[in-house]
Image 1 (cartoon, helix red, strand yellow):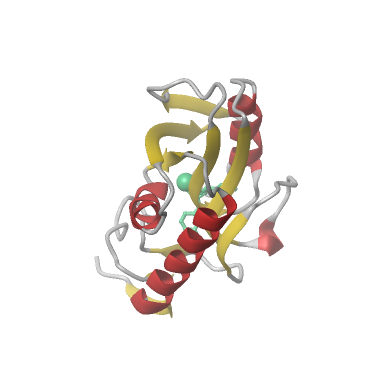
Image 2 (cartoon, rainbow, N blue to C red; image 1 turned 45 degrees about the vertical axis):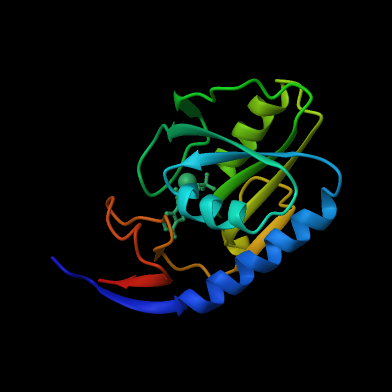
Length: 173
Ligand code: IMP
Ligand code: MG
Protein backbone atom coordinates (compact mmCIF):
# COMPACT_ATOMS: atom_id res chain seq x y z
CA UNK A 1 0.00 0.00 0.00
CA UNK A 2 2.53 2.55 -1.10
CA UNK A 3 1.05 5.80 -2.31
CA UNK A 4 3.14 8.08 -4.47
CA UNK A 5 4.52 11.09 -2.65
CA UNK A 6 5.30 14.23 -4.59
CA UNK A 7 7.79 16.55 -2.90
CA UNK A 8 6.35 19.97 -2.11
CA UNK A 9 9.08 21.30 0.18
CA UNK A 10 12.50 19.69 0.28
CA UNK A 11 14.32 18.78 3.46
CA UNK A 12 16.74 21.63 2.84
CA UNK A 13 13.96 24.19 2.35
CA UNK A 14 12.24 23.10 5.55
CA UNK A 15 15.45 23.09 7.58
CA UNK A 16 16.48 26.51 6.30
CA UNK A 17 13.11 27.99 7.15
CA UNK A 18 13.07 26.48 10.64
CA UNK A 19 16.48 27.95 11.27
CA UNK A 20 15.16 31.39 10.26
CA UNK A 21 12.15 31.10 12.57
CA UNK A 22 14.43 30.03 15.41
CA UNK A 23 16.56 33.11 14.84
CA UNK A 24 13.47 35.32 14.72
CA UNK A 25 12.14 33.89 17.99
CA UNK A 26 15.57 34.29 19.61
CA UNK A 27 15.52 37.98 18.68
CA UNK A 28 11.91 38.52 19.75
CA UNK A 29 12.43 36.87 23.15
CA UNK A 30 15.86 38.33 23.93
CA UNK A 31 16.42 38.33 27.69
CA UNK A 32 13.46 36.05 28.35
CA UNK A 33 12.73 32.34 28.53
CA UNK A 34 10.33 30.71 26.09
CA UNK A 35 8.05 27.84 26.98
CA UNK A 36 7.29 25.77 23.90
CA UNK A 37 4.03 23.83 23.95
CA UNK A 38 3.97 21.08 21.38
CA UNK A 39 0.70 19.76 20.08
CA UNK A 40 1.27 16.04 19.56
CA UNK A 41 1.86 14.16 17.47
CA UNK A 42 2.21 16.35 14.40
CA UNK A 43 4.05 19.23 16.03
CA UNK A 44 6.81 17.10 17.54
CA UNK A 45 9.28 16.97 14.64
CA UNK A 46 8.96 20.69 14.05
CA UNK A 47 9.29 21.55 17.72
CA UNK A 48 12.49 19.55 18.18
CA UNK A 49 14.17 21.17 15.19
CA UNK A 50 12.91 24.61 16.16
CA UNK A 51 14.04 24.29 19.78
CA UNK A 52 17.58 23.50 18.60
CA UNK A 53 17.65 26.80 16.72
CA UNK A 54 16.52 28.99 19.62
CA UNK A 55 19.33 30.62 21.58
CA UNK A 56 17.36 32.04 24.55
CA UNK A 57 16.52 29.64 27.42
CA UNK A 58 13.84 27.14 26.40
CA UNK A 59 11.54 24.84 28.33
CA UNK A 60 9.25 22.31 26.66
CA UNK A 61 5.90 20.71 27.32
CA UNK A 62 3.58 18.50 25.32
CA UNK A 63 -0.11 18.00 24.98
CA UNK A 64 -2.26 15.77 22.89
CA UNK A 65 -5.74 16.60 21.71
CA UNK A 66 -8.27 14.82 19.61
CA UNK A 67 -10.90 16.51 17.58
CA UNK A 68 -14.44 15.20 17.72
CA UNK A 69 -15.91 14.57 14.29
CA UNK A 70 -14.68 12.91 11.14
CA UNK A 71 -10.99 12.70 10.30
CA UNK A 72 -11.24 14.95 7.30
CA UNK A 73 -13.21 17.76 8.89
CA UNK A 74 -12.41 18.86 12.41
CA UNK A 75 -15.35 20.02 14.48
CA UNK A 76 -13.27 22.32 16.63
CA UNK A 77 -14.50 20.69 19.81
CA UNK A 78 -11.31 19.36 21.22
CA UNK A 79 -10.80 16.67 23.81
CA UNK A 80 -7.57 16.79 25.79
CA UNK A 81 -6.05 13.32 25.56
CA UNK A 82 -2.85 14.29 27.35
CA UNK A 83 -2.64 17.54 29.24
CA UNK A 84 0.49 19.61 29.88
CA UNK A 85 2.71 18.62 32.80
CA UNK A 86 3.44 22.20 33.86
CA UNK A 87 1.24 25.22 34.55
CA UNK A 88 1.41 28.08 32.04
CA UNK A 89 1.03 30.80 34.65
CA UNK A 90 3.33 33.77 33.98
CA UNK A 91 5.21 31.97 31.21
CA UNK A 92 6.00 33.28 27.73
CA UNK A 93 4.32 30.51 25.79
CA UNK A 94 4.67 29.59 22.14
CA UNK A 95 2.25 26.94 20.92
CA UNK A 96 3.93 24.88 18.22
CA UNK A 97 1.73 23.20 15.62
CA UNK A 98 2.30 21.29 12.43
CA UNK A 99 -0.42 22.92 10.35
CA UNK A 100 -3.30 25.35 10.62
CA UNK A 101 -6.10 24.26 8.36
CA UNK A 102 -9.67 25.35 9.20
CA UNK A 103 -8.31 26.88 12.40
CA UNK A 104 -10.99 25.22 14.50
CA UNK A 105 -8.68 23.10 16.65
CA UNK A 106 -6.28 25.93 17.29
CA UNK A 107 -8.84 28.57 18.15
CA UNK A 108 -10.37 26.26 20.72
CA UNK A 109 -6.98 25.27 22.12
CA UNK A 110 -5.65 28.83 22.35
CA UNK A 111 -8.77 29.92 24.17
CA UNK A 112 -8.38 27.06 26.63
CA UNK A 113 -4.67 27.63 27.26
CA UNK A 114 -5.19 31.38 27.50
CA UNK A 115 -7.34 30.80 30.57
CA UNK A 116 -4.32 29.38 32.39
CA UNK A 117 -2.72 32.79 32.80
CA UNK A 118 0.39 32.77 30.58
CA UNK A 119 2.29 36.05 30.56
CA UNK A 120 2.11 35.92 26.78
CA UNK A 121 1.06 33.38 24.20
CA UNK A 122 1.98 33.13 20.54
CA UNK A 123 1.34 30.59 17.85
CA UNK A 124 3.99 29.08 15.62
CA UNK A 125 3.06 26.72 12.81
CA UNK A 126 5.22 24.99 10.25
CA UNK A 127 2.49 25.10 7.60
CA UNK A 128 -0.57 27.18 6.97
CA UNK A 129 -3.35 26.63 4.45
CA UNK A 130 -4.94 30.08 4.43
CA UNK A 131 -7.54 29.16 1.80
CA UNK A 132 -9.05 26.63 4.17
CA UNK A 133 -9.58 28.96 7.10
CA UNK A 134 -13.04 28.89 8.65
CA UNK A 135 -12.23 30.32 12.08
CA UNK A 136 -9.92 33.31 12.40
CA UNK A 137 -6.68 32.46 14.19
CA UNK A 138 -3.76 34.83 14.63
CA UNK A 139 -0.59 33.05 13.57
CA UNK A 140 2.59 34.75 14.80
CA UNK A 141 5.20 32.58 13.09
CA UNK A 142 4.54 30.63 9.90
CA UNK A 143 6.99 28.35 8.14
CA UNK A 144 5.23 28.17 4.80
CA UNK A 145 1.82 29.12 3.46
CA UNK A 146 0.84 26.26 1.17
CA UNK A 147 -1.99 25.58 -1.30
CA UNK A 148 -4.96 23.46 -0.35
CA UNK A 149 -3.44 20.01 -0.80
CA UNK A 150 -3.17 17.16 1.67
CA UNK A 151 0.41 17.01 2.84
CA UNK A 152 2.49 14.56 4.84
CA UNK A 153 5.93 14.43 6.39
CA UNK A 154 7.74 16.34 9.10
CA UNK A 155 5.18 15.13 11.64
CA UNK A 156 2.12 15.17 9.40
CA UNK A 157 0.45 11.85 8.73
CA UNK A 158 -1.81 10.08 6.31
CA UNK A 159 -3.53 7.36 8.32
CA UNK A 160 -0.68 7.58 10.87
CA UNK A 161 2.02 6.99 8.27
CA UNK A 162 4.66 9.26 6.72
CA UNK A 163 5.24 11.40 9.82
CA UNK A 164 8.91 10.46 9.61
CA UNK A 165 9.54 11.85 6.12
CA UNK A 166 12.22 14.55 6.42
CA UNK A 167 10.41 16.71 3.80
CA UNK A 168 6.85 17.83 3.05
CA UNK A 169 5.10 15.84 0.36
CA UNK A 170 1.70 15.49 -1.26
CA UNK A 171 0.00 12.10 -1.26
CA UNK A 172 -1.03 11.13 -4.76
CA UNK A 173 -3.73 8.50 -4.51
P1 IMP B 1 -7.99 22.40 11.85
O1 IMP B 1 -8.77 22.42 13.12
O2 IMP B 1 -8.87 22.19 10.66
O3 IMP B 1 -7.12 23.62 11.68
O4 IMP B 1 -7.14 21.08 11.93
C1 IMP B 1 -5.79 21.05 11.99
C2 IMP B 1 -5.33 19.62 12.12
O5 IMP B 1 -5.80 18.82 11.02
C3 IMP B 1 -3.83 19.58 12.05
O6 IMP B 1 -3.25 19.74 13.32
C4 IMP B 1 -3.57 18.23 11.42
O7 IMP B 1 -3.53 17.24 12.41
C5 IMP B 1 -4.77 17.99 10.52
N1 IMP B 1 -4.47 18.36 9.11
C6 IMP B 1 -4.94 19.41 8.43
N2 IMP B 1 -4.46 19.45 7.17
C7 IMP B 1 -3.63 18.39 7.05
C8 IMP B 1 -2.81 17.88 5.97
O8 IMP B 1 -2.71 18.41 4.86
N3 IMP B 1 -2.11 16.74 6.25
C9 IMP B 1 -2.15 16.12 7.46
N4 IMP B 1 -2.90 16.56 8.49
C10 IMP B 1 -3.64 17.69 8.29
MG1 MG C 1 -2.07 18.54 14.56
